[in-house]
Image (cartoon, rainbow, N blue to C red):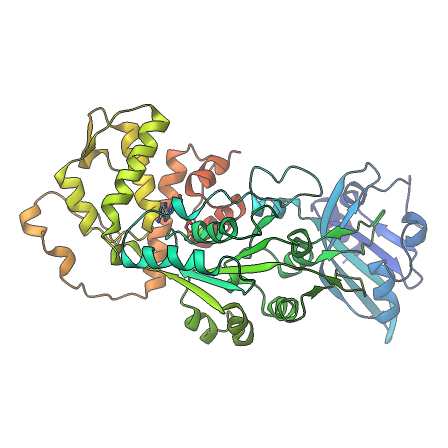
Amino acid sequence: MDYKNILKLVSENIYSGMFIVDKNGIVQFYNQSANDLAGLNVENAIGKHMLEIFPKLTEETSTIMRALSTGESLKNYAQNYYNYKGKLVSILSTTLPFYENGEIAGAIEIFSDVDQYKNINQNKHNKKLDSNFLEVANYTVDDIIGSSKCIKDIKAKILKIANSKSPVLVYGDTGTGKELIVQSIHNASYRREKPFIAQNCAAIPATLLESILFGTTLGSFTGAKDSKGLIEAADGGTLFLDEINSMDIMLQAKLLRVLQDGQIRRIGESKTRNVDVRIITALNQDPYKAIKDGKIRSDLFYRLNVINFYILPLKDRREDLRELSRYFLDEFNRELNKNITGFSDEVIDFFYKYDWPGNVRELRHSIEHAVNITEKNLITKSDLPKYVGVNSFGERQNLDNKSENETDHLTPKTIEEPLTIIMDRFEKKIISDALMQNDYNISKTSRRLEIPRQTLYYKMDKLGIKVDKKLD
Ligand SMILES: Nc1ncnc2c1ncn2[C@@H]1O[C@H](COP(=O)(O)OP(=O)(O)OP(=O)(O)O)[C@@H](O)[C@H]1O
Ligand SMILES: [Mg+2]
């Protein structure tokens, strides 16, 4: 079989760039994608030395040259660089030396553009270069609605601990208001004029997250860029790491070091830099279970958990329902220029019975939906979105036949499946409905669900949701 032809066929049809060099670093093969991604400024790179093609690199900074001299593979290595057109490119590269008769014979480097992941931290301010990740914390304690003991305690605690530098860990189910609490802490503190930076740790490759957090100095291509990581960018302010339980365990060890020493080191740099950052983390899983499952290092957890907040699910603080519903009704009346006066008894009754798996976010969206579509001045059952009322079994909770079902929610059901399966089914339903309601437009749907686009893609993939058209 002629492997050269197969290599050519593969390399011409993938979006990843590919370089193959001999043991001296002389290019033997490269593909069009390599040319496009690396922005080669030469007619033909074959027969040329890597350092001739990338004059800004050295034996040390070029990943290929390093692989040749050390014989080690560099897998999923994240790098930023400016290509010859001046465009900032982020790539993930894997460099593998290969051997013949026990000696290094050359190396292959495969790399792909990972700019898509950059959108994981989607917000309106991330367009500006070099302040890529600046966010604004909009919420304050006054935006936290509710007078249950849980909420009252949380608000009092926020004000009490705001000015301390101790790490904070916020734990609560999805949609319970974790982001609200985190932003309120920042805004109640002396750090309020300084950056508030949020990064979601889920669905992002570990090496890329590492370079995003710690910053980089080296690159294997033209004009390797020194770039600040988020930890440095948050200097003087607050860094919010969401879904910390999704962070790679090795990276957690590095984060622990930052917390202990107050210093960071950019990737590829030997010097350390002092940083003054308050770190707030959130997770939507029981922390002790996360430790038990190996999702969080216990040493990191105890360091992060100096101050903690736990928000009850909405169904366990139903006292807040009335106030929250009124608040959201007012909000959407204002926004949609309507004058709806309230909710029918049937709706209120349902609100009190329903489990609210999506918590406050689900309540808010239900009310937004109802205010949008109602033609009356009172919200009634038929105005609620159709996914509300789908109970954990994937069936619609029956709101009619009230007499028959009145105590239904109180009767324990035989649960025959693990919670994760039930939750996945529920999540799948919500995402599918949201996609449908937003014309299968990914950007719109992710905004609607208030999750980053990348997370939406990830969840669709995980839950096996296929759409014919993924419009953007
Ligand atoms: N107590 C509250 N008062 C007013 N609004 C709230 C409250 N709790 C949550 N919300 C609203 O519900 C929505 C979800 O809240 P938030 O994003 O803070 O949840 P979260 O816990 O971070 O969710 P996730 O785990 O999915 O990230 C937001 O629109 C937020 O404004
Ligand atoms: Mg959140």
